[in-house]
Amino acid sequence: MDRSTRPLSSKTIRRSKIESYDDDLSNFEANGAAALPVTNDEGYIKSNGARIWYATYGSGSPVILLHGGLGHSGNWGYQVPALVSHGYRAIVIDSRGHGRSTRDTQPYSYELMASDVSAVMDALNLEKTAFVGWSDGACIALVLASQIPARVSGVFFFACNMDPSGTKEFELTPIIERCINRHMQDYADLSSTPDNFKEFSDAVGLMQKTQPNYSVNDLAQIRVPVTVVQSEHDEFIKYEHAEYLALHIPNAQFVILPGVSHFAPLQRPKKFNSVLFAFLGEVTS
Image 1 (cartoon, rainbow, N blue to C red):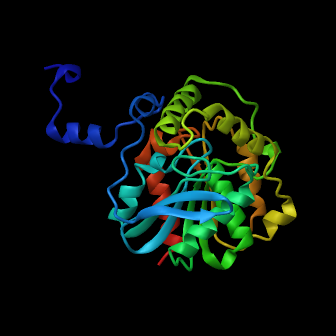
Image 2 (image 1 turned 45 degrees about the horizontal axis):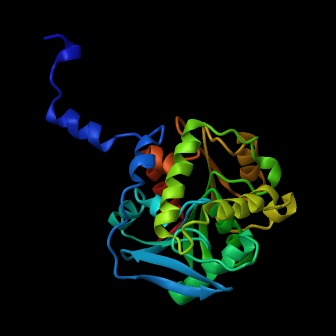
C-alpha cells in the first residue's frame, strides 16, 4: 500500500486530535474557546463604580489570568483546565465593561482596571499570586507589579506594549476579523448592555491608543520576575518593542513563540501552555 493512502493508526489519530490547531481562528469564530469548567466559586465584587465578575478553579498556588481587550475570561478555556490538572488554583476575572463585568462612566484606564483586580484579590484573601496577562491583561498585570510588587510573584507578559510606540499600524486581517466577530457575539451573550458593543469598543480603543506610557525609568523600577513572550507573527505588537521591554525590565526573560500570532492561546494551546508552565515553575512553589 502506498504510504500516502494507508490508514491512520489509532496512535496517529490520538496524536492528531491532541495537537489540533486553529491558526486562522475559524473554530474560535464559530464556537469560541473550550468551555470553562463548572465551578461553585464565582461571583461579583464591587469596585470603583463597577461590578467585577470572577471565578476560581482548583486549588494550590494561585494564578490570575487576565484576558485581552474586547474579550472575556472564557478566552482562557484551553489554559484553565491545564492549570487545574497541574495543581494550580486558576482565577479568571472579566475586566470592567468586558464579559459579565459592568462599568460606570469613568474612562477606561489600565490603572483603574488594575485596582479592580486588586479588589478581587482582597475579596478572595489572596496575599500573593502569579499573573498571566494577554494583551491588555498583560499591561494590567505589569501595572500591578509596579504598584503592589509584594503581592505579585511574577508576570507572564504576553503580546502587549507599555508605551504607544510599541504597536504596529492596524490592519484588519481575516484572523482579526474572525476574532472580532466572536467578541461581538460573546458581548451580546454576556454583557448587561448587549447592544453597546461599538460604544464599548471605541472606549477601549481610545485607551489602547493613548496608554500606557511607561518610561525606561518606570520599567527599571519593576522588581518582580517577568517573562516577556512575543509571537513570531503578532499582528499588533512590534518585535523590537517586546525585545526592548525584556532588556529594560530588570532580569526579565524573553521568549519567542514561533508559528503563531497575537492569538497563540487559541491557535496552539499546547505550545503556549508549555511556555506558561515553564514560567510558573520558576515563580511559584
